[in-house]
Image (cartoon, rainbow, N blue to C red; front, side):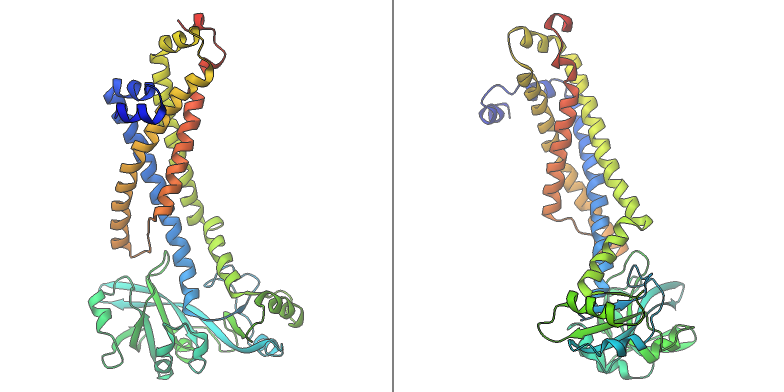
Length: 390
């Protein structure tokens, strides 16, 4: 290792020799950096899964513009909108069709367990508003008390989900009614629900109390080929009587929902603070190690200054130590985080992932944090006279 670093730095790796001089301190420092990396990796994976889980239900539908109530910060929150705004929107020459979208929550009791499902009510006669993965099952939704279920719902075994199909439907009891599931689609549980359920608008009214067909949660619009969703949304904002409505391109609604969950909802803010805390933990640990190392070798640094070496050379030695700690601590941190995230994904069924891009980003952040700690640790050497250091 010494030979490799000598070739890399073009000089004797003084920082590496100082770190390995006290192996117990080196191991403790690497464990601290690895722990900080694990904390950051896990928090970033959870935040990433929140983005995926938030944007996932938007992928069940195919629309270009969405009309929502003024307080609708997400797909599942907010007041209802009047169905009449759909008919006003259809007067725009670029709007080719529209569909009311109903959103609610139903609970399925299965033995001693409970499955909470975000339920969408759609018009089965308008399959064009369903994604290509859901569209083939649209005609099944026209059957009374029927639906298609998220095959990755927590509490629903993979083997059981695989057996559900038009020829072998499954039945569930919801509020005293028997709901027949004729097919499944690929979804996945989120932070607040176990999975998703898609039914017809008529079945939705039977499953969710207090809802009326004249008051959907959102209105989805399709546009003529080549029409710009942002331009059409701006036109509709001026055309429709209720100026308080939120009329946005569908992709913009998805992006704003994800931003809302990450920056304004308590869960997203907490996970964001977790990332900051992980960075601060790494900074403190590396600073403590490097400042202690500088104090232990203060006479050697004084000798270097007396020999005419400048502050830049001394800082380079400490930064060398910081980079070594960052590189050697990031690898085990990444590997441990992958194991933990894999176990969490299996238990929670959340879309937790740790991409190589995230790993590289955290590594760069670790290097910068360690470099900052090293710079802070050498402050005593910057202006001190060599005689004062002995």
